[in-house]
Length: 283
Image 1 (tube, rainbow, N blue to C red):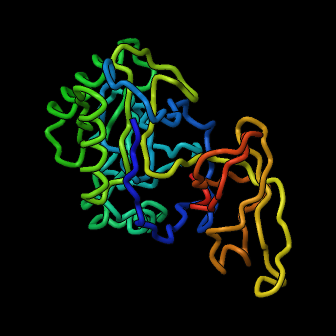
Image 2 (tube, rainbow, N blue to C red; image 1 turned 30 degrees about the vertical axis):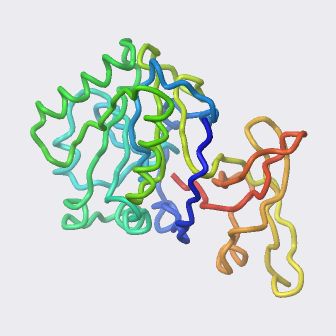
């Protein structure tokens, strides 16, 4: 199946990070499932499909709400008190195309009640639960129903009939300003880490890499960073020069930090083509 929808939506995304404002103590990063890129010819039979929300991932362990990095989410007490005892995995979300505004809300060490009442916790999994995903999804719906709280929502998980129906759903989400789709094998067990049972479908591929060096700029970038040298999960090193703002070139992501980038395919050696900086992952 080919998806030839062209997405031109791109905003200069802010970087979430309470850590840059005041010191914060991170626990060990919570274990979560991570998606791989969906192949273009994927047969969606046996998968449940949901919208991919461009929010801030937050994991509730029954006692504390943390970002994927392990840093605490400084949510108001009333927000945390409404969460159930069951561990949850989901996205703090304000709406399509509002990532920057969301980042401004959740990065604050002193949360603003009025701002937090606007966002939603979109729950899509139950970390550590033994049931297959279809049963976990049904359980999330029941948890949301029992909570009777409009800020806690179960992400809609639905099957699609075939590749044509998947393409239509994909195009519809993009047309409405969404980021893409997530596909989860209905019969899959929960297990942490990158998984073939969890796939993402976006107009552009994205991935994360660790910053290993700063390459000096030339010309208009003299005295600033011209590119980031990064290493991907599979050990491939390459440069990311596009997408960096002037501010990020002056104060680039630190060595050892994790950044998200977009790309369009790979070379024969596995190097991402047209790698473009998207944001630094602070949380």
